[in-house]
Amino acid sequence: MRAETLAVASAEVVRARAGDPEALEEVFRAYEAPVYNLGRRICGNEEDAEDVLQDTFLEVCRSIGRFRGDGSLWSWVRQVAVSKALMLLRRERQRTACSLDGDGNLAGMVGRGPPEPTAPIDLEAALGRLAPVTRAVLWLHDVEGYTHEEIGELMGKTASFSKSQLSRAHRRLREWLK
Image (cartoon, rainbow, N blue to C red; front, side):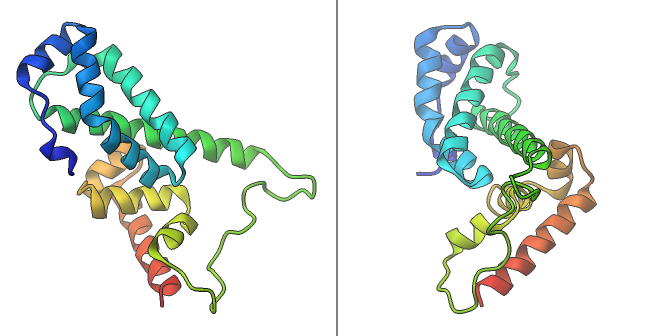
């Protein structure tokens, strides 16, 4: 079921904006699975997806009073989730860049690169091999429908950055899935 089909009644939104715990729980129940799935796709693993889910709904509970209702509630929640996922990726990238393993190599870089040419591969495995930022751009553009301008804004980069990351993702996936 797509998140867009999961509507939270406008009365529930009004109650949630007023801080009603039952209404906030209804919002959580309506969007828990789509937010988790979005976090899983952007971050690439279940543990980070759980963190994105938790961080997203903590922010939703804190900030729902500022939801203006200009768009759908799902659009707003999705925007919060994407921001939380990208923040998590930035933290991970900073942590990885700063940590070296015992051999003086960057930790977390082992196993990167294209799969063995004879190894069977599926799309899920290929997506998992992409760098987290590249995978996030691919997912946001090709699946979530964000424009390059929107992605650039979310990531604090330019639209050109988004375009180059998407091109890189498509090129690598074509190579790996041959």
